Image (cartoon, rainbow, N blue to C red; front, side, top):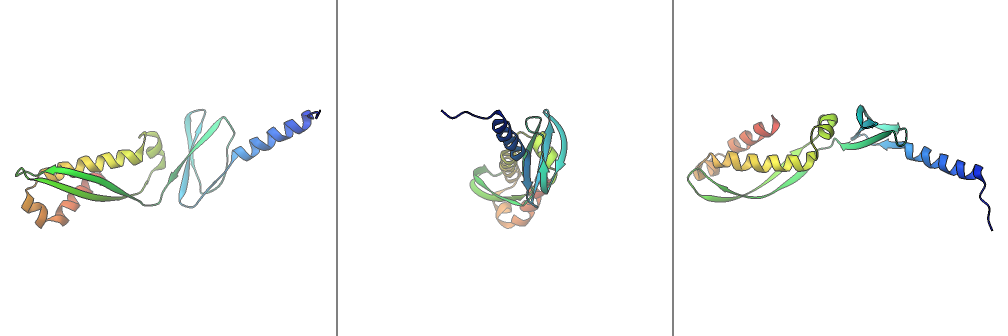
Length: 146
């Protein structure tokens, strides 16, 4: 029968806590740190040391994200049904707001893009859509950037 030394058990637990408290954030990441559930700070990039159980961190990627918007059936102002595809390029500028103010910023961005696409294209006639794509793109971008 193997007897466990209490010192070895304590050392093992201490090592686990040390490894659990060390996080590494890449140059393109930031960490939103919470202390007992309350926002504390934005950390990164580099080596981050957290107090296990008391502090939690959520990673946020700051790189440009390319998102394919699902095909949308849009009815133009002259009642023509059009199927539209789109792609969104976006990046997180404020990690604190992205984590705290929105439950799922990735999904929220997709939903906002779909709604804006249908709304803007629904205000124009089919001929305007075909002739003025650059203007429509600017209108959609201005609404999404606001």
